[in-house]
Every structure is written in C-alpha cells, then in structure tokens.
Image 1 (tube, rainbow, N blue to C red):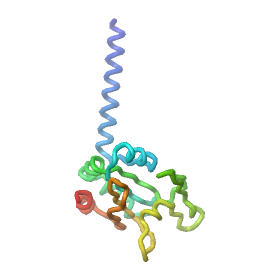
Image 2 (cartoon, rainbow, N blue to C red):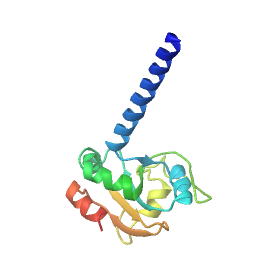
Image 3 (cartoon, rainbow, N blue to C red):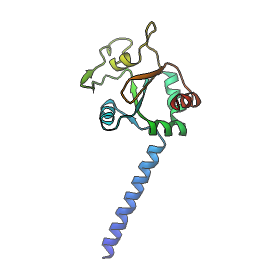
Image 4 (cartoon, rainbow, N blue to C red):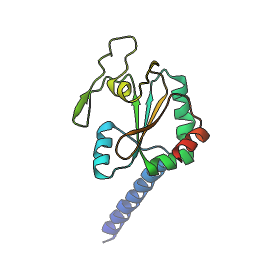
Length: 161
C-alpha cells in the first residue's frame, strides 16, 4: 500500500510539474504555428492571423524576435487574438496549404525567396523586403502589411486596432 501511494504521489507531482512548466512556456512566448497547423486551426475556429516573414541574415527581423516578440503584452495579445505563423523566407520546405502546394522555386538562386512570402507580402512597384509582417482577418483576407522593424509599442498599436 505504501509503495502504491508513493508511486501515485510521484506520478501526480510529475504531471503537475510538467503541466505548469508547459503553461509557463506558452505564456512566455508566442505560440507560432506552421501553415499546416494554421489551416487546421482556421477550419476548427476562425480567428485573425499574424504572419512574420523573416530571414536569418535580416538584422531588423532578428531584433524584432529579440525585442518586440518577447514583450509580455505583445505575446499576450498575439496568443489570445491571433493565430501566429513565423516563416523563414528562404526555407526549402514544400508547404501544403488550402489544397495547394507551395515550394521555393528560387532556392538555387541568389535571392531564394519561397512562393508563400512572394504571394502574400509582395508590393506593386517595389521589391520584396524584410521584415514583412502580414495581418489577415478571420476569412484569411489581408488587412495590413508592414515592411519595417516595429518596436513593441508600434506593434501593440497595430495589434490593438
């Protein structure tokens, strides 16, 4: 009987520890989704979408990851009001979304930008630039695009619109 109680106590303590550690982790960072997870989430419960297109070499992108995306209020609003996707524009991944296949046709070229950011964050009469932030409504229609570094206060003003 003593061994069963000790074992049960150990299991319950372990579960409590891991569940609170997981909760603390999700509250301290943005819950980034893949495009596959986004598609499933939108089907189950439509919600606004925030997409951050970045590259490993992009200084302003990295600064946003270290400053704006670590701000507790930015994290809270994005996690509660949006589905968030973060995508490296140079990925070679094949992405299935909306019954379509998207690839990086340019991966062997000097500027290897994937099809998805080119489709979602291109501008008329201007080259593709980073950082590129895209906001979409619950119906996956673009509502705003930003092509600059945004500090936490600037990003909060946009998120709270």
